[in-house]
Amino acid sequence: MNLPVPTMEAPPVGVVGLGQLGGSLAAALIAAGRRVSGWDTDPAAREAAAARGVTIGRELGGVVVLATPIPALGTALDDLDVAPDATVTDLGSVKVPVLAALGERFGARFVGGHPMCGTERSGHTAADPELFRGARWAVCLEPGTELPRWLRVAEVALAAGASVVPVTAAEHDAAVAAISHVPHLLAAALAAAAADAGPLALALAAGSFAGGTRVIGSDPAFVTAMVEGNAGPTAAALAAVRAQLDRPWPELVEAGHTVAARSGERRTVRVPLDRAALLALGRAGGTVDRRLAAFVEASLPA
Image 1: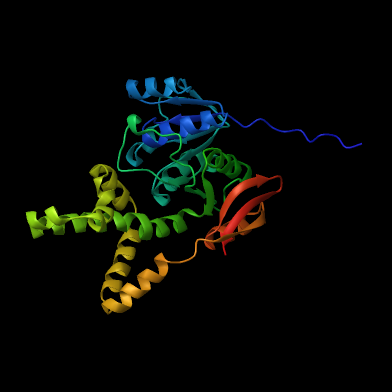
Image 2: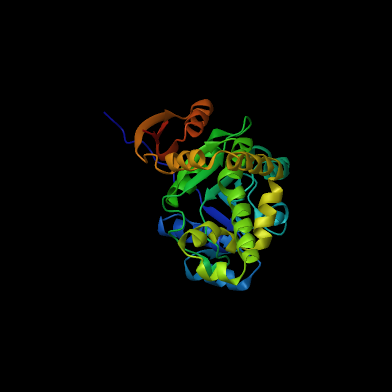
């Protein structure tokens, strides 16, 4: 006789910081049927989250998500009552320094994370339950990470509509320096150079300029904290861009076009719940898309 396999209820999620990222995550998880509580020092953010179905309170358990600015991560939980067995994660755009600070405090209970999404807007009025839909969400898998806790964080990302990229903190910071942090600096440089070129240049600016400078519309304090918090990898990635600009222009244009025109096709694979296998998936450009008992369903570039 085959007995039904018991299912475990997904743990609750507590979100600290209910601005654009935290408010969007809370709303997405509510829509997915997860139990969500939350806290923010801003009464207006608390009120907006409560209207979306979030239980507002200082008592948090299950998976606790820190969605505050990076400088506030270390103290965000100081006045809150966090369950001693809770898994703690964050949404910060830099991982090595966050791991050093929060890993020391929470040990194996901390699992770093970073969803690759967001807009130049900020605050609770920018919250959108669809913000994470189709996004890539890096979830750090360090030598000391407990796999069950990693899975709890990964399942939060999946429930919000994202795909999970297993990485180490160091690999994450090197990668995002190239594809996120340097683009913010380049956008700032393009905007400043156009301003120096004068009012005529700005008056003629169209789509390519708008696309190239969009991200520098973000809060300057946020961008500064991001690039300075990842200064070493960002400097290395910026040097690589300078080296590219020294190539013959036809060669550079062709190389860049080839990357931009690459195929987006992907193939589905199954990957065991094993640290080495998961990290190999991430390094190959793969994503975890669904949990399947002792395996995950994942996709890789075709």
